[in-house]
Image 1: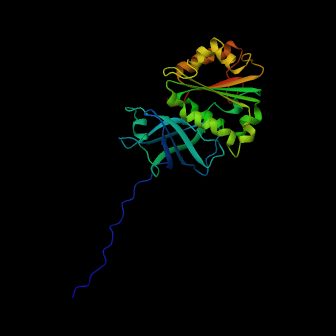
Image 2: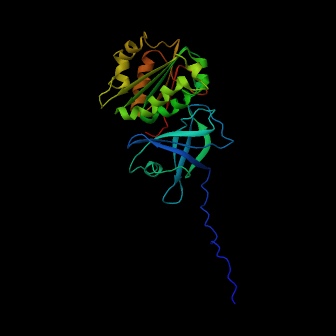
Length: 272
């Protein structure tokens, strides 16, 4: 009688590890153009809130396809968070928008960037100017205790086309007073100023226009921007960056850098 041998599964095919691989832990879609996701964090990764890293996937040619993404989570978080647009024919985001928890992405653990407290001289009030997914570095800085320890007042402006595109930032800002780590620090220091340019909302208009005509200052009960006390960070399209640089410099602010701190800084590398 022939002995029956137990059926064994074939040796599983191992999925090759991506270089600098990190695992996706959560994904949330806000609109057909915007989503956020969280990943594991390398134990060795150290970064300053507001910095960005290169992340991506393997392209169709088998080579890493990487783009600069601001880290939206604060430096103390155990995981990393990113906020991204979806470009249907974009080389990276056309693929990245389909990631699911358990998938892997490439993360090059070399953070850099100018939207950091070290690049600014001490001040009393800080402005965060964001459009679209340019909110990401400020999502990190708004959750950093150092922001509230260094400034008496923190103003975050966020301009998008439609109301739904403000959701990520609105939800984060509204959660801060109840945050167990920084809620007490935030107190009444934080002011949120969202605007839309296309869909009707309580405040319409581009932030540049609202600064030039003084609407922002009137709405917030502020005299204006003073180079002795006000500091600013800008993250948006190249057009916005250029326009805001001119506006800030018209108030007497100078552009700073990590090696030469001043009154304002601009981030030039972000997706969206």
